[in-house]
Length: 274
Image (cartoon, rainbow, N blue to C red; front, top):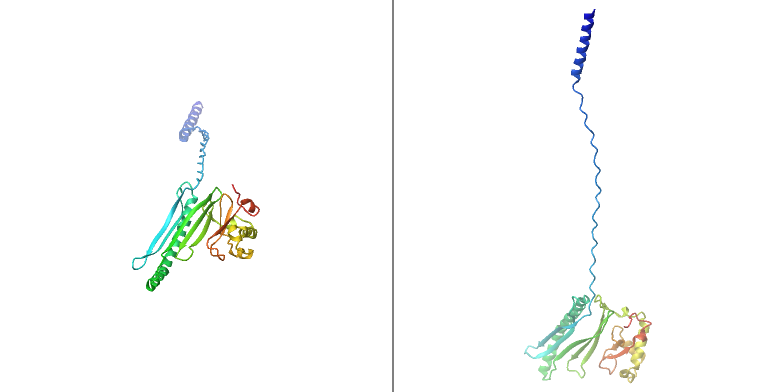
């Protein structure tokens, strides 16, 4: 009885050992790793560049650009000479408007040279006729000069004189004027200065009628109004200067001008005199 019990217990023990061996070793426990927190990166501020100050435009320094040509006939006789001396801003690096102004006068000079070339053919014909008929011939001379009559931070005003002598009793003289924006170089017109064209005309015509050059001529307001051209003006330190071209009025062979003080036109003018 005891022997059977011992065997039975031994069998049970053997079975337990067998089952343990079949189950294999106990699984290893892998420890759980805790992720470290991502550090917060603070961006380095980018310094704001300090803007460079815009250089102030300097007043223009004036020189000249000259367009000139001498023309001869087939026999070598000098029959025409032209010389146009026009404005040129020299310090265009410090005066940006200068390039625009220079280009405007460069184009004007080139256009006048083209006109002179076209006129040359007529002068040659006149010379040939005079020579064939035994008449004396006076060479044609054209000259142009300029004057800067006002230069401020509001306006640059230039007056030109164009002289033509072709042997007539009186030389022909024209007065020209241009006004420019000193910041951009854009050419300004009558409407850039005045708000009421009719009021300006009325006051300018009255000034012409009272001028010493015209008062003795008995010119009517209607005749003076017909001769008045609104774009024929410039600015000086004394006021607006308007003119009527020579040979526009009977017996008047040279330009006639009047100066209108700025106060006289301040109610219709956009220019603030300095």
